[in-house]
Image 1 (cartoon, rainbow, N blue to C red):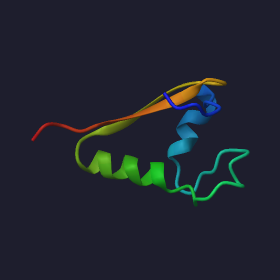
Image 2 (cartoon, helix red, strand yellow; image 1 turned 135 degrees about the vertical axis):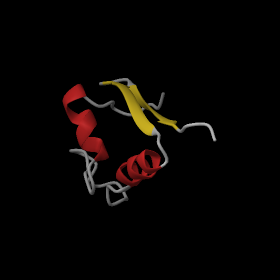
Image 3 (cartoon, one colour; image 1 turned 180 degrees about the horizontal axis):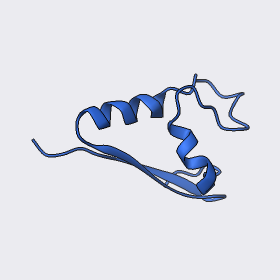
Length: 68
């Protein structure tokens, strides 16, 4: 788990949107495309990305891909 601010359940789906930036993250570097691309690539390979998060505590992002 990271030590970030965590993501509310309502916000979690938005984090995988193209160019989405979390409120308060606009001062940080980036354009908001990393998680979008990760999800797109995973889905094209038959996998998926999952997020578990607790607001105020942090988040864990997991990538699942099928075995060859």
